[in-house]
Length: 300
Ligand SMILES: [Zn+2]
Image (cartoon, rainbow, N blue to C red; front, side, top):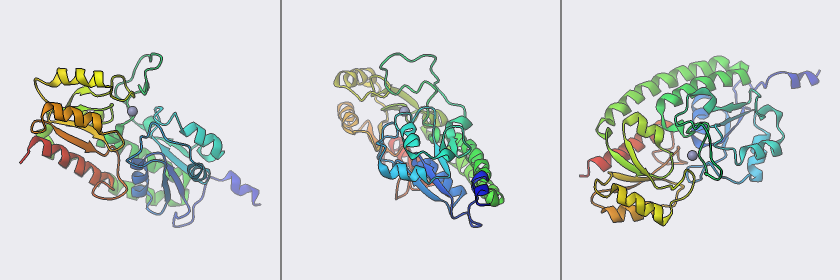
Protein backbone atom coordinates (compact mmCIF):
# COMPACT_ATOMS: atom_id res chain seq x y z
CA UNK A 1 0.00 0.00 0.00
CA UNK A 2 2.65 2.50 1.04
CA UNK A 3 4.72 1.71 -2.06
CA UNK A 4 2.02 3.39 -4.16
CA UNK A 5 2.81 6.75 -2.59
CA UNK A 6 6.15 6.84 -4.37
CA UNK A 7 4.42 6.57 -7.75
CA UNK A 8 2.13 9.52 -7.18
CA UNK A 9 3.20 13.07 -7.90
CA UNK A 10 4.25 14.89 -4.79
CA UNK A 11 1.17 15.76 -2.75
CA UNK A 12 1.73 18.57 -0.29
CA UNK A 13 -0.52 18.99 2.71
CA UNK A 14 -3.89 20.61 2.11
CA UNK A 15 -2.37 23.99 2.97
CA UNK A 16 0.60 23.49 0.64
CA UNK A 17 2.90 23.89 3.61
CA UNK A 18 5.01 20.85 2.94
CA UNK A 19 6.30 22.00 -0.42
CA UNK A 20 10.09 22.42 -0.38
CA UNK A 21 11.47 24.56 -3.17
CA UNK A 22 15.12 25.11 -4.05
CA UNK A 23 15.79 28.34 -5.98
CA UNK A 24 19.17 28.90 -7.62
CA UNK A 25 18.84 32.71 -7.49
CA UNK A 26 16.90 35.11 -5.25
CA UNK A 27 14.60 36.35 -8.05
CA UNK A 28 13.18 32.84 -8.45
CA UNK A 29 12.83 32.46 -4.68
CA UNK A 30 10.85 35.72 -4.67
CA UNK A 31 8.66 34.55 -7.56
CA UNK A 32 7.95 31.21 -5.84
CA UNK A 33 7.01 33.04 -2.62
CA UNK A 34 4.63 35.26 -4.59
CA UNK A 35 2.87 32.24 -6.16
CA UNK A 36 3.21 29.78 -3.24
CA UNK A 37 3.46 31.81 -0.01
CA UNK A 38 3.40 28.73 2.21
CA UNK A 39 6.24 26.90 0.48
CA UNK A 40 9.59 26.45 2.24
CA UNK A 41 11.99 28.18 -0.12
CA UNK A 42 15.79 28.02 -0.03
CA UNK A 43 17.82 30.30 -2.29
CA UNK A 44 21.26 28.95 -3.22
CA UNK A 45 22.65 32.45 -3.79
CA UNK A 46 22.08 36.01 -2.56
CA UNK A 47 22.50 39.41 -4.21
CA UNK A 48 26.12 39.76 -3.06
CA UNK A 49 27.13 36.45 -4.65
CA UNK A 50 28.08 35.90 -8.26
CA UNK A 51 25.52 33.37 -9.58
CA UNK A 52 28.01 32.17 -12.24
CA UNK A 53 30.33 30.82 -9.53
CA UNK A 54 29.38 29.46 -6.12
CA UNK A 55 30.57 26.61 -3.94
CA UNK A 56 28.54 23.41 -3.65
CA UNK A 57 28.23 23.69 0.15
CA UNK A 58 26.76 20.77 2.17
CA UNK A 59 23.78 22.91 3.25
CA UNK A 60 22.86 23.44 -0.40
CA UNK A 61 23.16 19.74 -1.19
CA UNK A 62 20.83 19.00 1.76
CA UNK A 63 18.33 21.64 0.58
CA UNK A 64 18.29 20.20 -2.97
CA UNK A 65 17.93 16.68 -1.56
CA UNK A 66 14.65 17.54 0.20
CA UNK A 67 13.25 19.72 -2.63
CA UNK A 68 10.17 18.69 -4.62
CA UNK A 69 10.84 21.57 -7.00
CA UNK A 70 14.01 23.38 -8.07
CA UNK A 71 13.72 26.69 -9.92
CA UNK A 72 16.86 27.85 -11.73
CA UNK A 73 17.79 30.19 -14.56
CA UNK A 74 19.31 27.61 -16.92
CA UNK A 75 21.01 28.61 -20.21
CA UNK A 76 24.24 27.40 -18.55
CA UNK A 77 24.29 30.23 -15.96
CA UNK A 78 24.68 27.60 -13.20
CA UNK A 79 26.71 25.12 -15.25
CA UNK A 80 29.69 25.53 -12.90
CA UNK A 81 27.85 24.34 -9.80
CA UNK A 82 24.29 23.04 -10.28
CA UNK A 83 25.15 19.71 -11.98
CA UNK A 84 27.47 18.89 -9.08
CA UNK A 85 24.74 19.77 -6.55
CA UNK A 86 22.21 17.62 -8.44
CA UNK A 87 24.63 14.71 -8.51
CA UNK A 88 25.47 14.93 -4.82
CA UNK A 89 21.85 15.48 -3.77
CA UNK A 90 20.81 12.31 -5.63
CA UNK A 91 17.18 13.50 -5.72
CA UNK A 92 15.36 12.09 -8.76
CA UNK A 93 12.57 14.68 -8.39
CA UNK A 94 14.92 17.50 -9.43
CA UNK A 95 17.09 15.79 -12.06
CA UNK A 96 17.14 17.42 -15.51
CA UNK A 97 14.02 16.45 -17.44
CA UNK A 98 11.91 15.74 -14.34
CA UNK A 99 8.87 18.00 -13.73
CA UNK A 100 10.51 19.11 -10.49
CA UNK A 101 13.44 20.73 -12.34
CA UNK A 102 12.20 24.04 -13.73
CA UNK A 103 14.55 26.12 -15.90
CA UNK A 104 13.28 29.67 -16.45
CA UNK A 105 15.38 30.07 -19.62
CA UNK A 106 13.31 27.32 -21.29
CA UNK A 107 10.22 29.54 -20.99
CA UNK A 108 11.49 32.71 -22.73
CA UNK A 109 13.44 33.85 -25.79
CA UNK A 110 17.01 34.98 -24.98
CA UNK A 111 18.99 37.81 -26.55
CA UNK A 112 22.61 37.64 -27.77
CA UNK A 113 22.83 33.98 -28.72
CA UNK A 114 26.26 33.07 -30.07
CA UNK A 115 26.91 30.80 -33.02
CA UNK A 116 30.26 29.58 -31.71
CA UNK A 117 32.43 30.04 -28.67
CA UNK A 118 36.19 30.26 -28.83
CA UNK A 119 38.45 28.50 -26.39
CA UNK A 120 38.98 30.25 -23.03
CA UNK A 121 36.52 33.06 -23.65
CA UNK A 122 35.04 33.07 -20.15
CA UNK A 123 31.31 33.26 -19.38
CA UNK A 124 30.17 34.00 -22.88
CA UNK A 125 26.71 32.46 -22.49
CA UNK A 126 26.50 30.75 -25.91
CA UNK A 127 22.81 29.94 -25.39
CA UNK A 128 22.06 33.65 -25.03
CA UNK A 129 22.16 36.14 -22.18
CA UNK A 130 20.72 34.40 -19.07
CA UNK A 131 20.24 37.59 -17.03
CA UNK A 132 16.62 38.05 -18.15
CA UNK A 133 15.32 38.59 -14.60
CA UNK A 134 15.89 42.26 -15.45
CA UNK A 135 13.10 42.23 -18.04
CA UNK A 136 9.57 42.46 -16.57
CA UNK A 137 7.94 40.98 -19.69
CA UNK A 138 10.13 37.88 -19.56
CA UNK A 139 9.52 37.61 -15.81
CA UNK A 140 5.79 37.54 -16.57
CA UNK A 141 6.36 34.70 -19.04
CA UNK A 142 8.32 32.73 -16.45
CA UNK A 143 5.65 33.36 -13.78
CA UNK A 144 2.95 31.90 -16.02
CA UNK A 145 4.94 28.73 -16.71
CA UNK A 146 5.98 28.43 -13.06
CA UNK A 147 2.35 28.63 -11.85
CA UNK A 148 1.48 25.72 -14.16
CA UNK A 149 4.50 23.74 -12.92
CA UNK A 150 3.54 24.32 -9.28
CA UNK A 151 0.07 22.99 -10.06
CA UNK A 152 1.60 19.92 -11.71
CA UNK A 153 3.89 19.22 -8.73
CA UNK A 154 1.25 19.95 -6.08
CA UNK A 155 -2.16 19.10 -7.67
CA UNK A 156 -4.32 19.66 -4.54
CA UNK A 157 -3.32 23.34 -4.62
CA UNK A 158 -3.72 23.81 -8.39
CA UNK A 159 -6.65 26.22 -8.11
CA UNK A 160 -4.85 28.31 -5.47
CA UNK A 161 -1.74 28.64 -7.67
CA UNK A 162 -3.87 29.66 -10.65
CA UNK A 163 -5.72 32.38 -8.74
CA UNK A 164 -2.56 33.73 -7.09
CA UNK A 165 -0.89 33.85 -10.47
CA UNK A 166 -3.81 35.73 -12.02
CA UNK A 167 -3.65 38.36 -9.26
CA UNK A 168 0.15 38.61 -9.49
CA UNK A 169 0.05 38.95 -13.27
CA UNK A 170 -2.54 41.74 -13.19
CA UNK A 171 -0.55 43.66 -10.61
CA UNK A 172 2.77 43.09 -12.42
CA UNK A 173 1.35 44.27 -15.76
CA UNK A 174 0.06 47.45 -14.19
CA UNK A 175 3.40 48.09 -12.49
CA UNK A 176 5.34 47.36 -15.69
CA UNK A 177 3.38 50.09 -17.49
CA UNK A 178 4.07 52.51 -14.61
CA UNK A 179 7.81 51.68 -14.59
CA UNK A 180 8.04 52.24 -18.31
CA UNK A 181 6.32 55.60 -18.01
CA UNK A 182 8.49 56.72 -15.08
CA UNK A 183 11.66 55.60 -16.84
CA UNK A 184 10.94 57.57 -20.04
CA UNK A 185 13.67 60.18 -19.27
CA UNK A 186 16.24 57.35 -19.31
CA UNK A 187 15.73 56.69 -23.01
CA UNK A 188 18.94 57.35 -24.95
CA UNK A 189 21.06 57.73 -21.80
CA UNK A 190 24.54 56.19 -22.01
CA UNK A 191 26.11 53.94 -19.40
CA UNK A 192 29.24 51.85 -18.94
CA UNK A 193 28.79 48.51 -17.21
CA UNK A 194 30.66 45.36 -16.24
CA UNK A 195 29.41 42.14 -17.90
CA UNK A 196 26.11 41.75 -19.77
CA UNK A 197 24.17 41.62 -16.48
CA UNK A 198 21.84 44.56 -17.17
CA UNK A 199 21.47 44.10 -20.96
CA UNK A 200 17.74 43.28 -20.76
CA UNK A 201 17.06 46.33 -18.57
CA UNK A 202 18.95 48.60 -20.97
CA UNK A 203 17.07 47.15 -23.94
CA UNK A 204 13.69 47.56 -22.28
CA UNK A 205 14.30 51.17 -21.21
CA UNK A 206 16.24 52.30 -24.30
CA UNK A 207 19.48 52.86 -22.38
CA UNK A 208 22.73 52.44 -24.33
CA UNK A 209 25.63 50.51 -22.86
CA UNK A 210 28.54 52.20 -24.65
CA UNK A 211 31.33 50.07 -23.18
CA UNK A 212 31.90 46.97 -21.06
CA UNK A 213 34.59 47.05 -18.38
CA UNK A 214 35.21 43.34 -19.04
CA UNK A 215 37.94 42.78 -21.65
CA UNK A 216 36.22 39.50 -22.57
CA UNK A 217 32.84 38.26 -21.29
CA UNK A 218 33.28 36.86 -17.78
CA UNK A 219 36.85 38.17 -17.43
CA UNK A 220 37.35 40.87 -14.76
CA UNK A 221 38.51 44.35 -15.84
CA UNK A 222 42.24 44.81 -16.49
CA UNK A 223 44.11 48.16 -16.27
CA UNK A 224 44.84 48.21 -20.01
CA UNK A 225 41.24 47.49 -20.95
CA UNK A 226 39.97 50.15 -18.52
CA UNK A 227 42.34 52.64 -20.10
CA UNK A 228 40.92 51.76 -23.53
CA UNK A 229 37.36 52.21 -22.22
CA UNK A 230 38.31 55.60 -20.77
CA UNK A 231 39.79 56.73 -24.09
CA UNK A 232 36.68 55.61 -25.93
CA UNK A 233 34.09 57.37 -23.72
CA UNK A 234 36.06 60.42 -22.47
CA UNK A 235 34.78 62.83 -25.11
CA UNK A 236 31.14 62.11 -24.21
CA UNK A 237 31.10 60.72 -20.64
CA UNK A 238 28.27 58.29 -19.77
CA UNK A 239 25.74 59.31 -17.07
CA UNK A 240 26.77 56.32 -14.95
CA UNK A 241 29.29 53.54 -14.51
CA UNK A 242 27.27 50.59 -13.22
CA UNK A 243 28.40 47.51 -11.31
CA UNK A 244 26.51 44.82 -9.38
CA UNK A 245 26.64 44.26 -5.61
CA UNK A 246 28.90 41.22 -6.11
CA UNK A 247 31.48 42.84 -8.36
CA UNK A 248 34.60 44.62 -7.10
CA UNK A 249 33.77 48.33 -7.21
CA UNK A 250 37.37 49.50 -7.74
CA UNK A 251 37.42 49.39 -11.55
CA UNK A 252 34.16 51.37 -11.72
CA UNK A 253 35.45 53.79 -9.07
CA UNK A 254 38.64 54.38 -11.03
CA UNK A 255 36.74 55.04 -14.26
CA UNK A 256 34.37 57.51 -12.57
CA UNK A 257 37.30 59.39 -11.02
CA UNK A 258 38.98 59.70 -14.42
CA UNK A 259 35.77 60.89 -16.08
CA UNK A 260 35.00 63.40 -13.33
CA UNK A 261 32.54 62.67 -10.54
CA UNK A 262 30.38 65.67 -11.46
CA UNK A 263 29.75 64.18 -14.90
CA UNK A 264 29.46 60.46 -14.26
CA UNK A 265 27.80 58.70 -11.31
CA UNK A 266 29.14 55.51 -9.73
CA UNK A 267 26.16 53.20 -9.39
CA UNK A 268 26.04 49.87 -7.51
CA UNK A 269 22.79 48.20 -8.57
CA UNK A 270 21.47 44.89 -7.22
CA UNK A 271 21.17 42.40 -10.08
CA UNK A 272 18.50 40.50 -8.14
CA UNK A 273 16.23 40.94 -5.11
CA UNK A 274 18.08 41.55 -1.85
CA UNK A 275 17.64 39.93 1.59
CA UNK A 276 16.15 43.09 3.10
CA UNK A 277 15.46 46.74 2.36
CA UNK A 278 13.55 48.32 -0.53
CA UNK A 279 14.75 45.71 -3.04
CA UNK A 280 13.57 42.68 -1.04
CA UNK A 281 10.60 42.00 -3.35
CA UNK A 282 10.49 41.78 -7.15
CA UNK A 283 8.49 44.98 -7.57
CA UNK A 284 10.41 46.85 -4.86
CA UNK A 285 13.65 45.87 -6.59
CA UNK A 286 12.47 47.14 -10.00
CA UNK A 287 11.20 50.34 -8.33
CA UNK A 288 14.59 51.00 -6.76
CA UNK A 289 16.56 50.22 -9.95
CA UNK A 290 14.57 52.82 -11.86
CA UNK A 291 14.78 55.36 -9.03
CA UNK A 292 18.58 54.96 -8.84
CA UNK A 293 18.97 55.36 -12.61
CA UNK A 294 16.68 58.42 -12.69
CA UNK A 295 18.84 60.11 -10.07
CA UNK A 296 21.83 59.97 -12.42
CA UNK A 297 19.93 61.82 -15.13
CA UNK A 298 18.49 64.52 -12.84
CA UNK A 299 21.15 65.41 -10.29
CA UNK A 300 19.52 67.98 -8.06
ZN1 LIG B 1 26.57 36.31 -17.17
